[in-house]
Image 1 (spheres, rainbow, N blue to C red):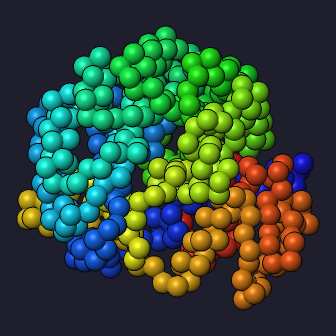
Image 2 (cartoon, one colour; image 1 turned 30 degrees about the horizontal axis):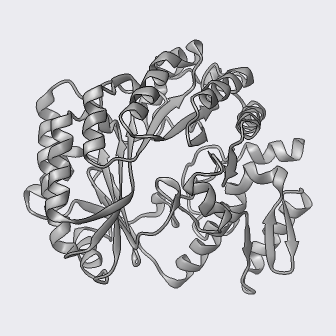
Length: 436
């Protein structure tokens, strides 16, 4: 146990991409984004990610690119600029069909129903929207109105992802997000009444003042509301990256051993309620399409977490959003003003990214395999990586079968560290969150 605890104290990327974003370069910019978007085959399916960078109130724990707003005209200007970016992207992408849309943030329901409809009209006028297999919106239950729900339904939204985090009052006070269970219960009931029945919850462990009993109680209460999917994330305390997290008292954060215990308790509660474990931090009811995809070996991982990957490219819209192309990644300006300035010149706001080489693609596939299936077949040339994994095998984290390496069941919380062994950029200085 002491040996495993030493691993829990290490840091590692979440591997929602490879290479990860700290290794993106300013050498990749707007012209490359335009080139890659225009080079997609005519039959390519697109996924759109829309980043809404505003919240009515900022939560202290949040690591997202988000800003609190006081004036409605700020958001109205954002919507106008987003419509410019939608039109610019559609022109570069020609007539590609869109298979899925994901709204993230920030808080997408900080937009008014009228603004949401304007954006949807812009999307329909510029892209060929197929009957969307997935149209998901991240929602804050505290500010979700009935008008929002009817608007989302009219727009074809079929999945709501609710930020729940923790349902105990003292933890909510310590993390700067007051959200009693009654608010979540009401949001779920109104969404289902509005025919948005596919519901996901995000829960968190490792929060300030949080105990194992707190996350266990939260998981049990969450299960009573019967979401189709639940994600359980470890709180990433990165105050050097998000200054708002400095409002959290570090002395109140659980240590590595407590985080491990909390993650395990939440996991066992979900399994006891009939959820299926997917990857390192997702759970779903057995009938859910994500659970079926995992069982069929079709699971993928991207910036939205574990997904059923059918799209050929992901086009990011909004400040800080990331696009994924066969050739590599591009990321928009994180600053709203810098993003807006680029669009005012009728150019893309991409300011950094990475062009994939053959080694990136190989390692990316191996890391994806580890993150999605907990196993990978190592190339014969990976001698150094094999030696590093042999130490993990001696520490009872992985097992070998010829060139195949497998993460042992009890060691799945350490999967990110196993993936990190295959990361050629891992030695480059970059600060990450705790691996567990």
